[in-house]
Image (cartoon, rainbow, N blue to C red; front, side, top):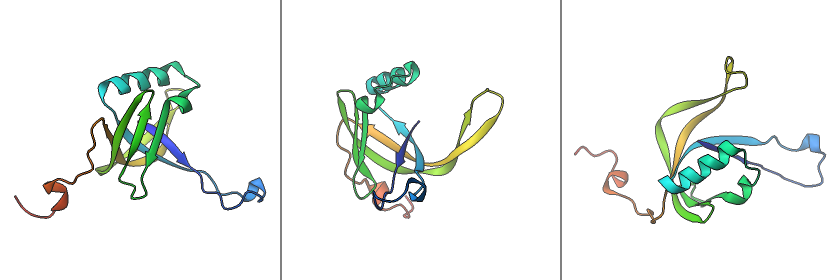
Amino acid sequence: SFHYSAMNRNSDNKRESDAPAELESQFILRLPPEPSKALREALRSGATSLKDRLSIKIENDMRYGEVRVDHWLMHAKVLDLPTIIESMKTIDKKSFYKTADICQIVICKEEDDHTTTDDESQPYLDP
């Protein structure tokens, strides 16, 4: 999984202590095999150029967007998960602490998937 941070700044001339806290949100990022392999290798190597190699842009509807990993540009669709997943961190591999509740997945495909299926448009009808 990958996490992104969103900052809400009202004014640049406020003192730093008055600035709003940074809000962190986590989600699962599902990529096709090749971009996934490239991103995984970059994360494991501790690459400092990750900001240059990965970008996520979500449309105003918060359901569609674009994800770029190196030279791959993919269409993204944000879906709600059926359950909440707890994200944990550890420093010493003994003590774990919760960092977030994950309730969304971003599915990336090279082809556009902006259409709704019959299942999505009629979720409450019995088959």
